[in-house]
Length: 482
Ligand code: FHN
Image 1 (cartoon, protein in one colour):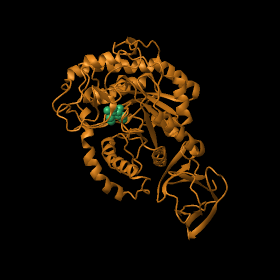
Image 2: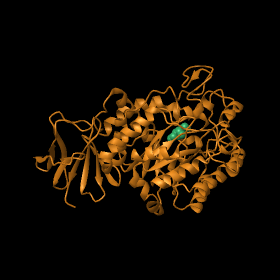
Image 3: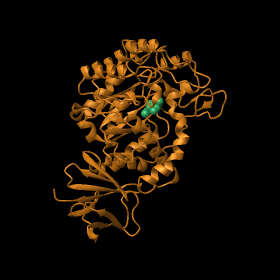
Image 4: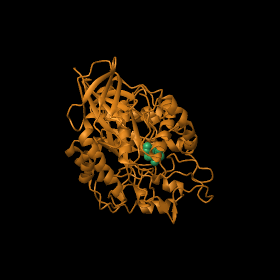
């Protein structure tokens, strides 16, 4: 079953899920609260599907940088960006329109499939890719200032187009007027600024070749590839391209994409292990995410990858990450106005850090490589919050939920950070029962000590200043002896 069709049911489940988990206070606006509730509900299915994963001992050393980082940038960019979410006067989504029966997602990177754009036409668009405004240096600087420590870019998305000059396919950057090595430019800028470079690679879906998996729509699109056809694609394109990416660009992580049981006939245990084996041989340090086979990740992935915008409300028992959007779509969509406020993203980041997970936040550059203004604004707003509070997110250890929001803590547990989502009207922040006597407390970004007192035996509280330093997440640092 296609996960996109499950969303209405998942929304209905959310109330129960939230009630069971002693949720932190509701988010600021109704829009924000509704989105958060839907996210929380969806998560349970993903964790169940990934429950079989065992993370190997070697993985611990390999992923140390990843767990310290907590915050990364996802980039969905390719031929689909040219369409900006619309085609021939039709804008995605197309609900209940018999001419366009292919689902109602706004995901702009799915436009070829959703709006059934003829292959020849889509290819012609792809082969005029020439992003004269792509500036890898500027992009990496933006991400770094926002506090992001790694970048994962779509080297190949479901449409099958390779964003580099691939030796095994002509459906690639090398066949376009762009004579630059875009991934190479990104790799150089990342290296210069100490940011890890990672690749998204669509190993299962590939709509450009006979053997690649395709979505099954009610009345349209192509049938799924047979196993023999898929094997030809697997050996002739998927495995060689993954090898090329490693040999040429030395990525720190390859991000694979499946999202449910649909992939199980193509991504069998044998193929999953073949792909993992290839990567482990070529680059023992390269991380692999659980969505290489969401239905059965096996024993050798490095962390679980939650579903899109699915946020756990308890530790899933393994290292994990949530891929998330700033709006609804991943690829550039000019009329998707569902932009999340930066403060909402800060809350998700705090929640991820609190539960020992990572937040991979997506942007969709335009076809010419430039960044939409709302994206730039959010980069800088996130960077502002991180400049003041980044220490409460990065290099931290797992902590947990609190009535006021979430706790994070330093690895040596000498400082615990209270992420306060709603500033109490009486200015008394109840920390609750603490296992040790705290020494002092302050607003993290102000520094001066606040009054700290025992509100009842063993229960501690802090008297706050009148105004919250942040509308969404004000961080109070509580210090202890080591
Ligand atoms: O179908 C893709 C989608 O386009 C996007 O790449 C997301 C990112 O997590 N993954 C798939 C859906 O889950």
